[in-house]
Length: 127
Image (tube, rainbow, N blue to C red):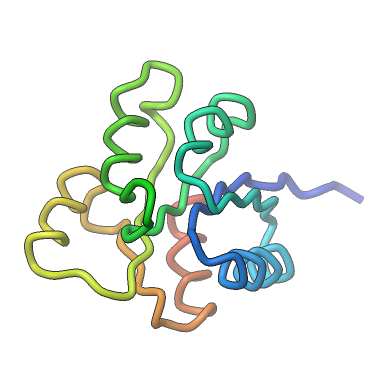
């Protein structure tokens, strides 16, 4: 039997319960290995060490916002090619425009959507 290749996802969100629940759901439903952190300051180190296929970034975090983290990742030669998707519950029109500038049209997900909707979107990106 052929073993399916697990895609690595780095999930960054300051809400521990959200990270735990989404990690469990993604790993249960897809061929994913999900790493999580609630500290945006750890993202660069984790991305370099683990080389994820996708980074899911919350936008609003207390220490550093997701767009700042994404800009740092895109500005680093070791992490610039990693696909970034933003997770947000609230975003105004200007925020969405800025997110699209960093991640493109297809890479903004609502935290208010269902896990199934997120799975479909992630599958389109990674599989």
